[in-house]
Length: 392
Image 1: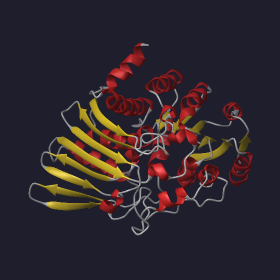
Image 2: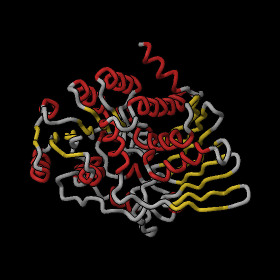
Image 3: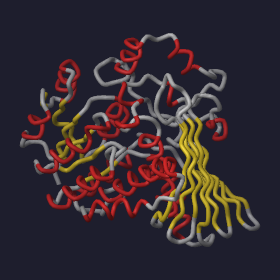
């Protein structure tokens, strides 16, 4: 089939990170873009010989465009995705899918009613080592999966942020942005329905007023459980436990402890906004080079009845009943190719997608259940939240 002619809604950091994979995939052609920054649009139009649209409506009305990549701020995802689907476009939407279960349910229904593909990503559920770990579990060779342990300690809260990124009511903080990664990872590996979530969240810095940490226990239909811990407060760095490999697969300098806090402390609010903008398309920020390692999301240990799997950026260490072995996993030639491949294959009808609208809906419901559990001190079943939306 002809290449999918893709329009971009939002030329920000998410687009920058996915651009190498989009540009290189033979089934994708970048054909148009909308962004509020005219200079970024003009550069895109020149670089890709593509259309420059000053409004989203203009991009959606472009008959050349087959599909839309929604890479705008979280709070805009639902409205823009639904508009694109109703315009007959397939949609790849950045995680989080949206900032409420109701919005995600509406998006999933809209994709179904319009007969369009809706993919949510990229997330770390697409990482090659996660897919391989899921395959090991599904093989049954090591017995049923019983427990997944994952934690990630980063400086997320002290990176340059727009105001909405620090506003819980607008999907800010770490729950919808970062827990979505961990939830995707454990769901992908365990492969069962989530039945309950018990969690505690932390909001510990009044200068960055949103939830910056959480701990959660998730139970699954087959009896497995997963413990998830995340802190974005810039103290301990859990990349130490994976060989000082950063989230994007780059080698980190362990001596640069506290860099994010120090840099942020020197910035005015205006400077922080400028630093955030500097990492977007059209601002001469560097595109990510091919990293030497796979992307990852912290320490991950999968426990089956007859083995534990330590899942690392470049390998899976299998600790069996009697034998320990290492499964090497090569880094991708271009990061984030997996999400582009899933999107293109689904549009072509070659392979049903994993990370479709219903997948994204469930992940967001898990995020919402995590937050609600912390507020109420009770176990929350995300399936109930989804059911309430289907009946409304």
